Length: 311
Image 1 (cartoon, rainbow, N blue to C red):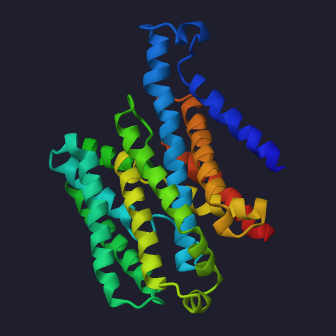
Image 2 (image 1 turned 120 degrees about the horizontal axis):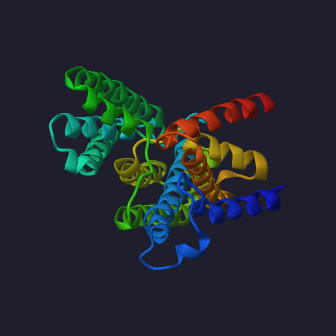
Image 3 (image 1 turned 180 degrees about the vertical axis):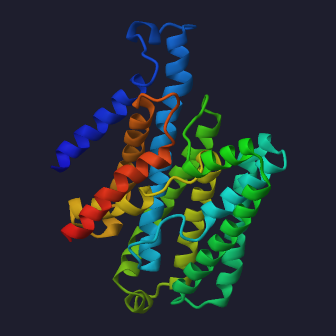
């Protein structure tokens, strides 16, 4: 089964750039200057790569959040980073800074991180639930502020805000992709660096302390690295739900191994899952691409319910 899934994953990655709403001629793709070549190399290849690395960030971020908070329902958006990015995106749209939407989104996510980790100094190492509650409170505050912006915005602005909240992988060229690739590789290498310490953390806080581990520092270091990576991802593609929730659970079910041994598989299959969702979104016969967040929710929610029932 594992080999079959791996083969299917590589097939999905290989064929995804070749299919979309516009049919491409294979013979023209590699001819410079043709429309098929521009669509393939400037739109579809960057989009597939973006989907893969964003999926990797979200899936691996979900694993870390679930491990640190010891909560199987935790996601990379639990601390309100995505809500902060969404609010500041709405501010940019409503007040006429549409050219700086990604910058505003990143500022909103970064401000949330600063607030969270400033408050974290008041908690001891066992109070990760307190940090979680602060993140939830911030999310409610951001949601209330977002409703105010919806109220004062016009129809076009409301539509733009709504599209951002659903997530979008629309990209032209490789400029934004470089940032995402750097953030995802940095996240993966950082988590691999802390793999052994993460194993102690997964056992219990008490066992980790007996082994000489600074639990609070490790918790907040991992959360900070994940939050920064997620902030970069959300600022570019918007909040895309369910990837960070379901992929770690699926991989644990399939491989039946401890989370610290599944870091690379979770990153890889998180990327493949989002590429597959984007493949579906681009090939549904509609006037425009279906928002990627809609597809992840449609596929993720039923499968997640199935896993819960099966357990």
